[in-house]
Length: 177
Image (cartoon, rainbow, N blue to C red; front, side):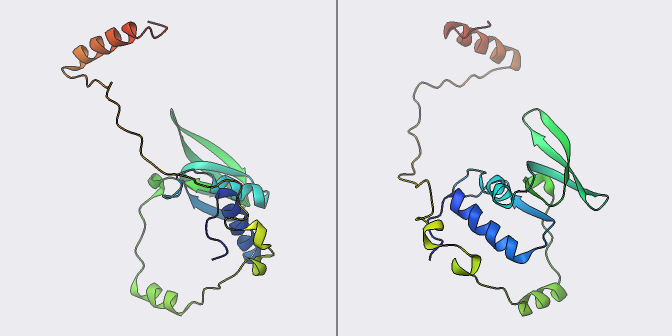
């Protein structure tokens, strides 16, 4: 309960402290973003708390020489390749690969594993550093904006759609046209 209501700062701090307890850790892989906050800030925040290099939107990872990682990452215009020293933090996108289902042997082994449960004190954190108390931000309201009534759907063949779009942009006085 002490961790409830945490923002991305408090969450990444808590995770960083847990990772330090597990050291040595060469690579931390995070999802791109959480479904609840959708901010994509925990991975980079985690790297900051761990004082490690990081990159985001990884779609392919390759270990190089044991102490370097080659990451192919998505960008707005395609992808780029970066190489970074380990230890590091990488957030990955869905294109990283399909999850594999464990076989019976691995399921049985997992059942026997003891997963530690740590509280704030176990991680060297004070109550005011975790959860809602340790958060710099707080969600006040979540809502969907009302639908816009000024939308216009452009239909027709591609050429007709392009001409209509250019006409609408000129009417809206969009510069460059």
